[in-house]
Length: 221
Image (cartoon, helix red, strand yellow):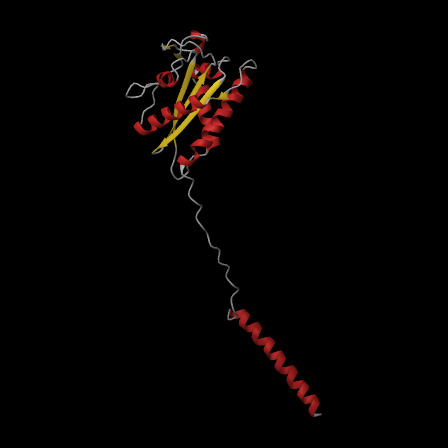
């Protein structure tokens, strides 16, 4: 009989506990569910655009070469020329430093005069395309995107397009530089004729007007 009473009381206590927990949940006294805290980190800042100029130069040189040969199967493949790269970089850096976009620097230097200073015996046809693009510091510079934009700018200009697609060019050099919120690019083309140069420089509106080989000549503005 005592054992039955103990069991009955135990059952009653357990039932009472269950009833109280139900009441707590009903009136909102039970412990709230754990709160998940998510830490939101700001995205990392874009790379310094100055560190991306070499990649931009490479992407642009490849893109230009591919575009030429798509438009004209007879266009000669372009090879990077160390001297042209050096001059193109010097021209881009000068434009960035002095904030201008022109085929002649404030001191009168041009790609043609720089090439003649480096190699007085050069004879051939030299072409130059220039361009500049602004960018937002918070977005940085995407070399692939900017290469496409520079190419589109030149392709939309008949003179620059003619210069870029001239089939006889087989050497090239690309220079890119940045200052403030602007990227400057100089793209050079040349033929390989290189003997008994006269040291004379003549400017033509397009490479078709000049026709290589001839004494060193600057082309499309």
